[in-house]
Length: 454
Image (tube, rainbow, N blue to C red; front, top):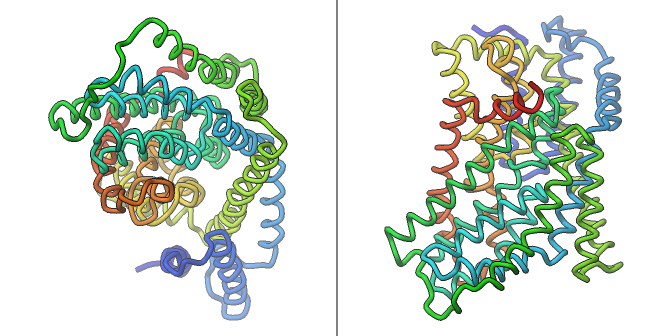
């Protein structure tokens, strides 16, 4: 039988899961449930002598204020709007258009070559922006018409674009990793270094699949026969097109990895660098700057709205004994420590069908992270990166896969929703393959941080 406080924890989590399907904004949902259970728990404890763990007085609302103030004064989180600004400004800079033009000429002559070019651009954008919505939308607008004109399968083209654009949530600088580091008091630099190899590995697996699938099933990605031969001028133009984003990546990630700047300081460098690239390409104007600033503000406000609601939810859940309940629940599973980790990842995978990565990172990760580190004895950097790779699937799994929504919003009408759903299935399978690789070979995550910091 469950203890009384455990029934409250189950009821709180169950209420959140049930109310998700009402379509009510998640931020208000989290905060509202927190307030209702806080007031209800205190009244039941004081007037009916019901055991509600530590939730027994009105000071809980003072804790709300303290936690919110602590979160808003966190210097690390200043990097969020900076990296968002950098991603949105790069979207306007014209770099992706130039890359696409050259990659089509260079790789488009081979079966699956255009798909490989799109994924390579996705990797470069991921390491330059960290914003999934901007990457998916930009790649779709640039590459989908070209792919369809070259008679690519609509499902195959959709899967390539959606998966390549989603790499930005894993490959540093990643907004998701910054929030995860804040939730578990980890070093952002360590997480960035730990996620770099798995993120690039995932991109390489996408490329291999695209090339092999195009060879095995030629109708998926046929090669055109009307392209000019490759010459040194084309190679030179392609290298010059790659150079600006590579320099920006080195400026941002290099300054973090070598200890020259903190992630927050490096985000400022990235934002300035993106603006300079837009200016050099003659894409920067007051109208563009105003639009980018407005979108940065709206995106940041959206993230912090959910962030504050999740903070209130977590405070009440912990006061009700949620940490103890989750610890007891996980340690009671009759599996080895590795098996318990797989159960957690499976729950995160299923949650990705209905929740965005943000809610999962803010609610589930803080509950299971300490258990994995303290009770099961695993390295927390490894687990968080493993968890992040798993959350990649939340962008590609219906019904709330955001990359699917971004893609559907900009593709031509002949590309149907079922084409997009069919196209992403192999890439979700590849994501789960990389999850397995990271699970069995933890050095894919831990090698680079150990090399950098000993």
